[in-house]
Length: 217
Ligand SMILES: Nc1ncnc2c1ncn2[C@@H]1O[C@H](COP(=O)(O)OP(=O)(O)OP(=O)(O)O)[C@@H](O)[C@H]1O
Ligand SMILES: [Mg+2]
Picture (cartoon, rainbow, N blue to C red):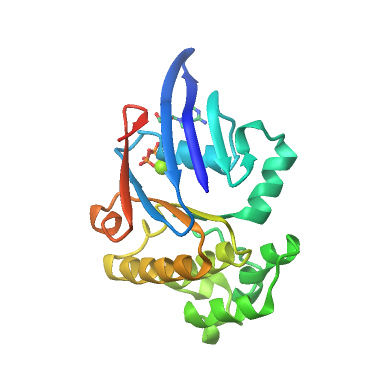
């Protein structure tokens, strides 16, 4: 479902190239839940940005189902993000002026992928029924992240990408949020690639890979 081959990416720093990714190979199967760890600066966020088409690779290929992300023009990558990818970050990135209910559904509506039955199921499974009329500033961190995960899954993505999604949560809340995410990923049948610094959380997924010296080990 996600098939990455020989992916490379450099940045230039003070005129010198910094080779961050040096031939990354990684596969994620439908329904598979993979944890990505690696020391700070090893390129985890860079890899997620490339998969999401938020930045362009220098070489290699990223196949997401039948689409080659690296070969698509900007508009194609934006369409892929809108229709096939769920993105969750450490900062919850909810829209402050929208209620929980509208935060959950607006991206799916823009993409023409709103499904009322699935929307209702997400609300129940994420325990958001009593919070629908609230605004993000009236929610705890764990509640905000549950909304962000619901928003990402509302389009029924093929792949859910998460960059330290529980990094701002205490350990018990992080465990709860991740347990819900694992269940929803299983229900959706999408792939799940999650960056984490927690070996404990990494151990709760199907597989654990590490980025080191520009490659996946
Ligand atoms: N836009 C950019 N321009 C220049 N250098 C960059 C850019 N983005 C990332 N880098 C560099 O690439 C390297 C990898 O950064 P990245 O954010 O992917 O690491 P990370 O593994 O996510 O780290 P962390 O665990 O701290 O989040 C770092 O050395 C960083 O300084
Ligand atoms: Mg990072």
